[in-house]
Length: 330
Length: 240
Image (tube, rainbow over all chains, first blue to last red; front, side):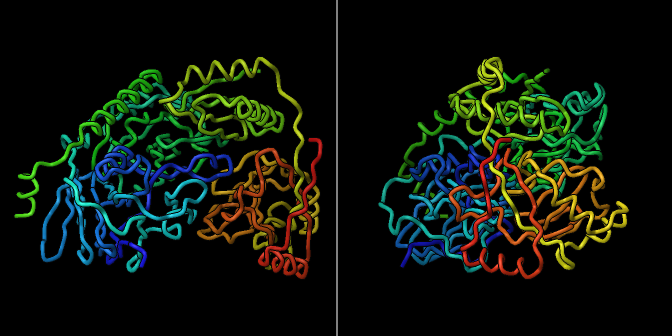
């Protein structure tokens, strides 16, 4: 039998996400990929996977699933919730640690508590054929993942490995800083000239709240309106994940990973790539403040972030025996 | 002509040729796109031509905004590049009752007869200005001026795949079922997007398109052939 995770309850929005789907934006296919690529990479590193190995991305709450393999090793990163293992040896494994789970055991990830999204990486990865070069799911276009959709009750998510070796489990050197209070850095433009000075000032000095209308395509924000200098519409041009559109309502929309490839609203600014995961983690009701940087600074910040991630991955260590003991006593 | 380099954060540069829908402007975008692709600049992830600008997506760990701009400026200095050979696609279009739910309304609002609308729509050779909105959706222009109407006041939640639509000076085809606010004047039985194809989209930016009217019987025959994977859309190479 194919090793798999059987989905008993999928959670509100659980999809396969790995690398971005690059090379098809010119024919209208969004790049998709994880809302929080930093958490995805760390989760993969904890179980020894390469950085873009497909994982399960869960929004707000995780799945309940049964292990249909002799043993699997998994790790959860991106939130404060842990992995509950239900069996004779019931235990809770906090985020940021790997754990080996045996056939017949059931794992549950409940409400994520603080973040919007979290990633469950499985040692060896999911056995999912890439579509247009990526296994990531684009639900609106029914592309990638499990039949192009979010997981449903009864799905079996195929795994590449039927068994994992016994070894010391690994943990992050320190918990991931989810940066809920950090101002979000943006590069102004490309259509800064479609907004008045007052509009730009208001954008950079106001506190916005993530609206309930937030999904993988875009996060709508509530807050003070932004004043346009001219038309509310532009002749469509390219957009990126992180583009901040301001439609006629004056309220900004941050385009996220499933963004359409082009758009017809003026874009006041773009979230820098290092801070895109920071947006991805902020659930409806959380606040966002923006601060402007130059593009060179944004590029430098991204390089620094990459170096920090690599340092963190290099410092992932085996847990002490005592640590493992205390876990199993819970 | 004035070209503007605009940052789209630290992962893309926009090279903007203008702010209008204009075939000459789009031609410049497409030529630069061809030059950038041929140059294989390090760190460039992909390029996205639109009506009036070229977006270059890059990896900020491999290159930077300033390098992209310098390289593109050199390409622009070299001149417009060679005239392209382009593909002309002949896409079957059924304008019969039941295939174009808004045709009557378009007739009322434009003051034209339905036969005249069909003659104008199918009598024009369109350029694929860009693909966007949804996978494989072509923006085709220019629509003859008498057919120009603003978008519908109440967009549809579901527009069936294959619907041929018009809005302002553009016509397009919905490759998959999706929401949509354009006027639906016909239906094509052919697929414009299919994940089983090595290149999933039938049309590419810069291609030319003509709609060839077919009646209900021909529509059904082509639809059956498409379902059986035995139909290919007529296509020829032409000078633009």
